[in-house]
Length: 348
Image 1 (tube, rainbow, N blue to C red):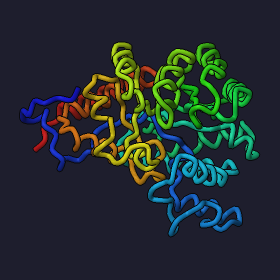
Image 2 (image 1 turned 90 degrees about the vertical axis):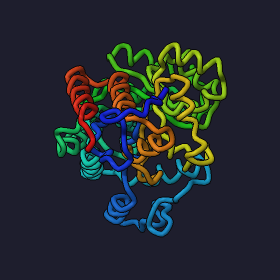
Image 3 (image 1 turned 30 degrees about the horizontal axis):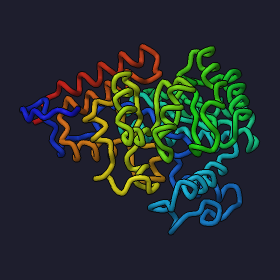
Image 4 (image 1 turned 180 degrees about the vertical axis):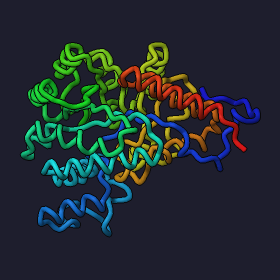
């Protein structure tokens, strides 16, 4: 639960304080979903395409609100199809870490649908080299990759993704399951849990976003998910909430994403505050920031303003994120030290 003690600094967090100075950790952001419309348009023109047609743009930008999840997926895939060469991918990766550095994000776990890029014609070794090159633009921003499989593509595609990961020279820290909930049952993807255990990786499952509480249960029971991405549907089932609180199941929540996709009416009705108050192990992320007109900093600001978070609460959110992350221990220590130093700073 959030604090209710209105004591003075350093616990008190004033809205006028520079939230960007907070050392941050982001665990739920899709690398292809960080491509803003301007960069996507430049990529499209470089491939000889008209951006408005190729990218489904509205007045030169992504739609301000999507009709439904399928509409978002259509626009997302139209953008990711423009990432066709290693240079394209390096450009995307470099822009991403520059944006994270500007927000003072110390550790990011970025989900990547590597199988799509390979299917589009990129050689795996070139893919991983491009990512290394792009990420090197901001050496103080540490990125761990979560390579995901897409539910509707089935378990054979998941097995192919595992083979990609086994042969990769890249900072991969986890496997993921994304896509349309209910299209293929979670139990069909046991290869992901087996591979994660063999390779020493974590596993993150998108569940309880467009699906219901049963998808969250299946992610936990059938796949042994180390973290749940979204998970907001769990709030429909008090018994599941009790279990997730007791088991300290980390849940990476992206409020603006849920609103922009029409899953939640607006930010004031988003259950993230109820999740925090219930004692769930919540972290905050941006998902696909330019698609949802947000950033991690803005997502934290939304939560702060709705719940009157104190300075120590914001620090605790970031400590929790690094604690449930798949980051190497040296990165964890560095992040905790930076967060602690921020929390101890008196606001003038």
